[in-house]
Length: 545
Image (cartoon, rainbow, N blue to C red; front, side, top):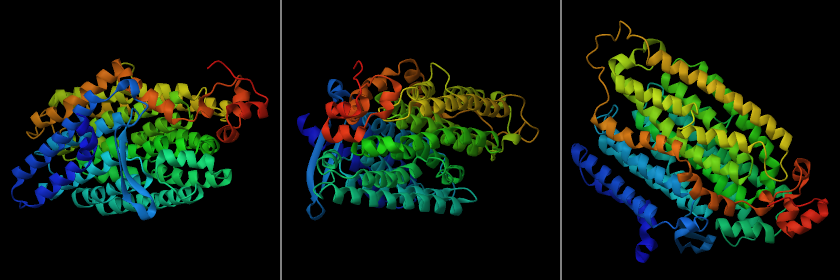
């Protein structure tokens, strides 16, 4: 097992590329061979994930496990460094689950112009990029994997998408590329201003303090990361590419985009931006929180205005990711734990919503809500599944969605040191109102599509059948996890909490007596000179730890 830990994570990252290379050797007419190779490859990666899940030391979830570090490009002082801790484990496992389920769903659902070979190769390349991003511990390596996912998703939308696929794919590409450029500039600035010795995430966090990077420089660098990661999330007002991309993407593309790709941005905040630049994070936190709550309300109102089922689900992602960003903006271990849980919950729930929307589109050949109805009569199992995931998405207690939203709202009541408490309590109230709007648009969607009687247009259509075998196999694990995580959320919280506490500066997490005192605490001085010096300079008292 010790030897496997040395190369197991690397195998999980690059095995999909091996599978894609093998598929290149077979002609595209051998569809069954391509399906078997793609599914077998993704299941092999999932098997590594099961070994990782069993072997992971949960008592040491705050340390990097299965870590590997090798020299990579000496001239720019970057390394091939990968590892996994409690913060990245749930997201890696989510990726390893979603990919084979998407391949299973695609088995007899390949969109026009068909071509399973190219379609499945793109999914495997995406698989490598997604896992690599979550396990990278070097900023250059992180950036490479972060960019690997761009072209496969672009082609998936541009070739297999809907009528407006060219516009949607180009918009997705340009938005993401612009954000990535700003992110790369921020990484380079951080590297040079911190001494130019390493791109290691932990090494840079130490170097920022030891080299005395100025507060003004930190603010600009964090701002670049905010744009880079925020566009990927996407945060309001950088969200406009998302509804178009989701609406035009094929079903599997929408599922992967919602379940995993959006999480690359939020993961960047909790893994890179906040741990390396906590002082700048405090300064930017009110603005991040503001954009988060605007996104929650705007996304919900946008949902209420939609007439297309898939576009409504796309706007709901803007609202749900707003709750994730609100948790991150609190800069507390409680808020970031809620954000990571929200990433997983959103991936499962919204991924399932897009799966069902895709199956509805295949049967009815439309997603116009006004033309749908009576799903519980014509396809009762699909109707009940839509009802179940709608309840989960609106945050019903006992289902996974609740634990992604409620703790994030609760965390806003008491943000980290240096952050304005009163302001975040206002954000808390606004976010809570967003949950009411969520119930409105999701119940409206359910009522219009599942209840009532089928319209005359589809009443006697023989193509409208209930969920088939491939759909059940693809959906069942996600439905079970939505319920299990809702009943026992500590399956994720227990793993992420030690890693989150390790990643957050103790200057942010120390309890200072009084809300006003906490808001006036100088996190920057604490980073440079220690907690005692910062307390003495501010004349503040330490609360109960």
